[in-house]
Amino acid sequence: MDLINWFLEAVARRAPVSIQVEGTRYLIGSIGVFLLIWVALHKPLAARKIRKPTPRTKQIRRELSYSALTIVIFMLMGVFVYEGAASGVFKFYSDVGEYGWTYLVFSIALLAVFHDAYFYWTHRLIHHPKLFRHFHAVHHRSVNPTPFTAYSFNPGEAAVNFMVIPLYALIVPVHDIATLIYMWLMIVRNALGHSGYELMPKGWTRNPWLNWSTTITHHDMHHEKMTGNYALYFTWWDRWMGTEHADYHARFDKAVGAAPQTPKGAVIPAE
Ligand SMILES: [Zn+2]
Ligand SMILES: [Zn+2]
Image (cartoon, rainbow, N blue to C red; front, side):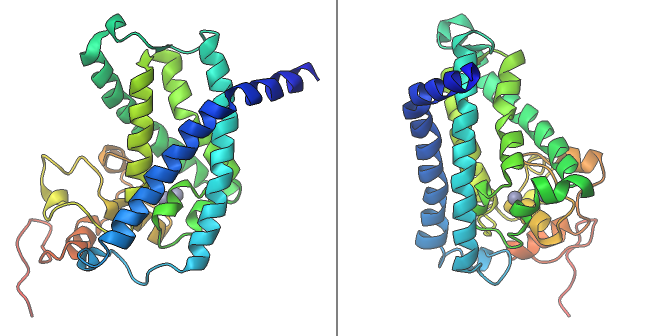
């Protein structure tokens, strides 16, 4: 009973900040991407639509209701993080002078690398037949994703995804501003990744200086095929583990309107 009282009291105390952080992040991030890509730019980007048809309103309605549930879970779990931070469990810090600006920027990049590995392996885990229905089926109901698929999760998957920053902050010192910047980058990249439009320039996946970064087509193919291309930001893990789709380059080329190429890079002559 004491624990319930403590939790309710903590929720009441932390709710204003939690709603501000999670609510505005989702509203501005996800709805912002929707308005930008699906409303303002859908005509100029028409040739970049990865797959037809455009998902129906019914799908978006379902995604929004699951997203609301995800936000509530993030807020409730956030209460524990705020309380933990206040009692010094995590290595969050607020004085930039403690480690300097260079470290602050480095800690964001390192968090992205950590998150990518965390996402790859937890993602593969929740694709296990025994876990899929309980943890990941909701996300995959969106076979052709929309910016709102970004937060459309089973509650269990939402909880797993939430844990990445607290786990990182248990080990690595991370400034409050770095945390906020990363949380914003995360939602915008996630919504863009589900936007259904390829936004990267032609030749991206074949350029060794660029192809370490995933494209929109990369995750779009994961939704289409329900398997492979498991990673989030970087192509490393899928390549190391042999889970990248063999036709990834060809599908990216098609999405950006580039001429199809042989694996060696020679352009196939038109028939
Ligand atoms: Zn999946
Ligand atoms: Zn997805």
